[in-house]
Length: 56
Image: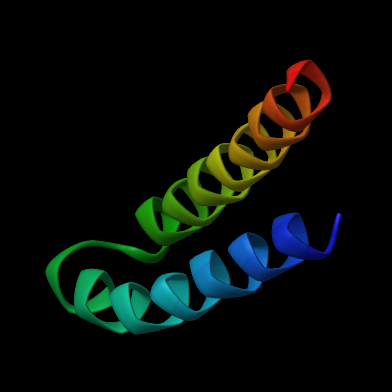
């Protein structure tokens, strides 16, 4: 679980770097979609990492 938390923190850091750039290019509505997509991807990565550890 500790490794999974690290992945989430790393994704959040990348998220914070990307959001301001996209705020300049597109509207605020798009930023919300990007945030939700990255959060979903983070959860998916954590889920598959846990599944992989269980099967080893």
